[in-house]
Image 1 (cartoon, rainbow, N blue to C red):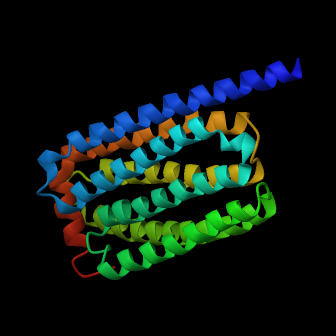
Image 2 (image 1 turned 60 degrees about the horizontal axis):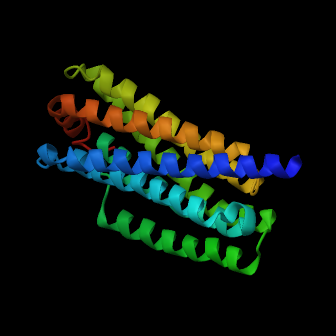
Length: 251
């Protein structure tokens, strides 16, 4: 009976991986296809491209998990694969969403810094997987690199958000309330999902239900992000001008 239950759980988990992976790829494709009219708005266009990359990479990651099923045969590699695309998501969030608030944020120095750090982390994530087939302690230690970067990204984003939103509301520049509310809700969800998912991955490397629930929550979150990003495009003129003006003197 227990064996049948385990087989059924793995089947449900595998189906969830493929279904959510395909949905993510479709959402990424829709963002890409709908981005052409916004080429003149460089920061917003870049954010759409980065979000499409982020959502698409997660979709490919889910499908790889579904094909390889490392969660049950090589837990350390499954964890390394997970943190590999979560780290990409953190970079895309930092470069895209912090830049929406401060158009001057992303510089060549930040791009180089984050790229080098990611390559260094990638080496350690997979080194742990290659040396130990299953070792939650070392996996969590390697995850500390991701958490350190995520903590810095979150700190930088919310610091920028508080400064920009305060200035926008003080100036009452156009109809920016929707923009401020969207950024708060959207990014709170991203941060909560990004950090809690990696924690759960490290604590429960082979369990079934946590990942299935995360997959469902994740696809809902990505759907909200894509929907909100499209809605943002409807106020692109006002918000672009507003953020340009409030960051003109620097943050």
